[in-house]
Image (cartoon, rainbow, N blue to C red):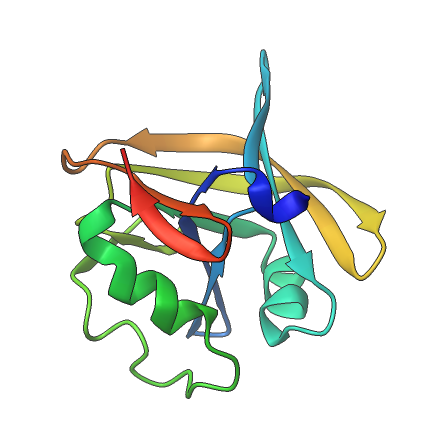
Length: 149
């Protein structure tokens, strides 16, 4: 049933002790407009989980259909951290997290709450910066497959 709900695809990034961390996420949503809050879910066993919680600041790059390769890459467990962003043009947010230049929307958030979500943590963040670096159709995920509008 849950695979029958179409979602957008984002890559969430953080930086801890000078090391970039990134993870593909399809459990991302807005929470509130006033204040502007968003959330994503991170599996507790993923190395990204502890890094993002400790860093307290993170970036979100909303992927266009043309960046399916990035989605697949950052969904892969165990990839080396060193140089993992090298294949994708990116820039740094005001707080220093990586945001993809090819994204159709970007944001930076600081963690405002973390809730237990079973084998995941629900990470809520206050949005501190927004951007729309490029145009394009969004990358979607539905029934274990990628698609677009």
